[in-house]
Image (cartoon, rainbow, N blue to C red; front, side, top):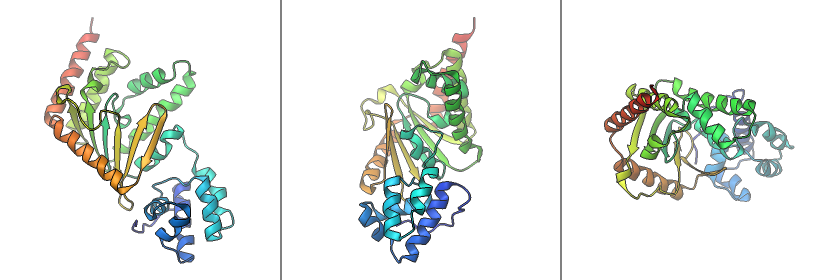
Length: 279
């Protein structure tokens, strides 16, 4: 069960719904587990709704209104809470990321979004949507850079990323873009704002060969795992499943280069790209 947290209902629609859900549930004399049973969700999931970690979907809002007798309050307001500047498959993960205290991510193909530069992000989105208008790409890039503002705090969240060596070798946007992007990652690592490790090619097979992995921990809610594929993504909150993904991440870190060795490699590759771009 999630421990109580004092929410500011004015901070976001999700915070408002979470605060009201906790109030209505407690007024009805139900525990998180008891409210979750007719919804076929865990008590932890109800706690994540109350803490603002998870988004309330319309199907749950309608049932909650019926169970708690809240006269369509949650049905009416969850529509506003669902609005997001991010793609549907990633929106809920981005919202959870914004309130996480620890983020651990394995990136097999691209620099993680929180660490991307503007030019790198633009090249990625243009590759995703080669025929989209520039205005659409501009909006996507702006949203990604806004996400990166999480790192403006000197300590929170703790961000630890393991990137595959393929991330360094895949030329996204050209040599100049790669030089700038990798120098940015190296700078954040050198400033001790993030922990970066590189999983080298010679590490061989590993448990995460099939895709990326993001783990998020919170002060007042159970941890979440997020897995993303081609135009798809899903959050996992089952404790046993999340524990398995945590083991996967621990083993990736054990197989990767140390943070010091990783920074040296990233800087070296960045310099190589910089030299390639010179006449």
